[in-house]
Length: 215
Image (tube, rainbow, N blue to C red):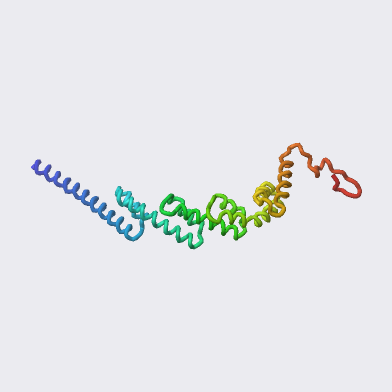
């Protein structure tokens, strides 16, 4: 009787163990099928998550390749739609995938053009300067000079002398750029002199009956 009891116990444990293994195998098989269905439906990120849980290296690689292609095509669509900022954000992680590097430069150039057209000439100039020998970039910078000249005058009125000088220097011989640049540089030198005496220093004020604000 005791032997029979041990046998029944062992049999019960074996059945239980087999059931657990079978259930786990079924769950794994079901999750693998779900991952395949997600991949076929174009849900590559969700499929990749399941493949990683299942440690399916082949599935992970297929998803990564499909995601790169999906993001590449989406970046192209955004670029064509004029959404240059989001297109660039999509392209940067792709590295050298297909024409990603070339498309990223296209994106920057077109974004700079849009900024120039909207009057944000300083931002446009900064982007142009990062593009080096990109076709049309040199011409675009030259075409920007009149707007940079006007922007420099605005900055000077706002007290942003250093920024104004940077723009005047780049304007070269355009109108009075060189003269204004030299004046701005002299003003910056005076401002940097800690020993200089201000013309309107209160200690130098001279009061008289005719003019109360003479220095």
